[in-house]
Length: 130
Length: 387
Ligand SMILES: [Zn+2]
Image 1 (cartoon, each protein chain N blue to C red):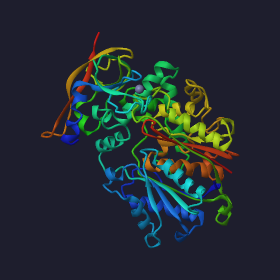
Image 2 (image 1 turned 90 degrees about the horizontal axis):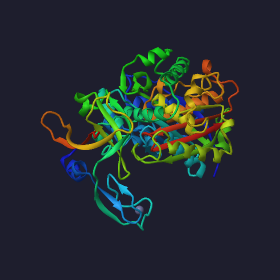
Image 3 (image 1 turned 180 degrees about the horizontal axis):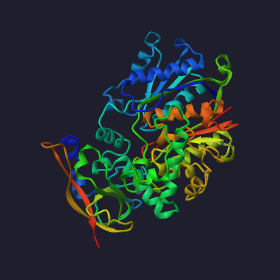
Image 4 (image 1 turned 45 degrees about the horizontal axis):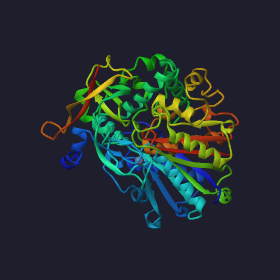
């Protein structure tokens, strides 16, 4: 991933900046600039998510793509944020710990790197909050 | 809208074909289809080719023209169009060809699919396939394609009755069928033990829950139904062509364990054909993973949500069952050259409806269905064919 492509998503990846539609009250992460429900009647403003949520479903990745090969096994989950949107994220916990409904909170972590001397990508992972 | 028929079909054998290049694969399938149809190159009015990622698998784009060229058609200057929708590229290529013939724009049209996957290392192919999901919000955090389907399986097994053994039976059945299909990548039968003792890829999915990396190509020739008998005594009519889309990410779906695009495309297809589930003699569904076949059977309406595991265990979806599913061996055993799969599904139905399916023939089959999924369900193509 190029530096610019990563850099322009830093507000979302580091600080969970999404959007909300003040017309209908729906929250969007990643941000949308157009409300699918209200369409042109929607009014979109920025919103910082707390990142707190619960595990909807999960897996343990044991065969990964190139950038993640050295991190296996790792826990991957779909997390439902308390405001409503769902996201896909890594969980910082053991495969035995994860369960559906588990409360989680965000942590700032290294996500991946472009080889030995390339860009290091940071972002948000989640840890058990109980 | 004109009625459309398939007048010829061809397919390479599927597998790790180290001696075959991308263009060789396509040419072989194309020649088989044209010979089967009795059509000469100069009679072709248009060519559609489904391909997911020649750019990443063999570093080649612009494959519509490349394929027309190597099929010996450069001097005829036929329109040649690439169609891409990840693993549903083949199904969409077929649909584009159907639309073209139905519209009256073109008469004799080739719909093909091709993928050459084994020229890159395993990690690179995993990464390329992850591009079928959302690179920014799934792939970036380490989601693999098996990982996403594994999360469907976890959700499904938490909500519905599905045992590890029932899930494994999908693979056992499809290997049984593949062992009776000369083009299949895997010609060996397996047992439930083979599946549950294979290595974990993404919990709960194991190696034998996953379709393989495959090279292959398939092609079919279409014509207006009222011209079909100029070329063949056994035309197969296209009774319905439907397509649907949904959110690109799995996490944004209304329901993690239901592919709403499958539901929508299935309904549209039945409506277009004026048929119902009871009319379908066999169906090729998109079993990129065992859990995907379970979902597909339910989403298309062959049973209610939560019942497909039991149906599979009871043999209802087997070759001799009430509704045979994936007689070709499916993606699991026949192989999954992503862009070719949707056309191979049509190829299988054509063979079955003509009574040419040999040891896996479904006696008296007159109506067959195909179900081709892109990504984790962001695109679905459903076709119904009949004689
Ligand atoms: Zn709104």
